[in-house]
Image (tube, rainbow, N blue to C red; front, side, top):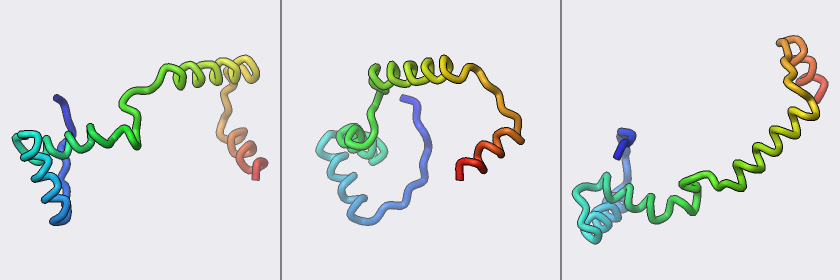
Length: 87
């Protein structure tokens, strides 16, 4: 498993929770306990993988935008005018 190294400061309750998860699932350390907790509840907040319908909708939106506006490139002055006129 590839991962990111973090230096975390958790309160005593969080430490106890990780200890219980570690013991309950027979894990080697609290890092594995945290990963288990994230696997169990992470998808309530973030999808593990992008759903195909989202990718299709983004591609359709992009294609429609290109059909309507083409591949238009703005210089800084045009971009500034566009931003300032939208206020």
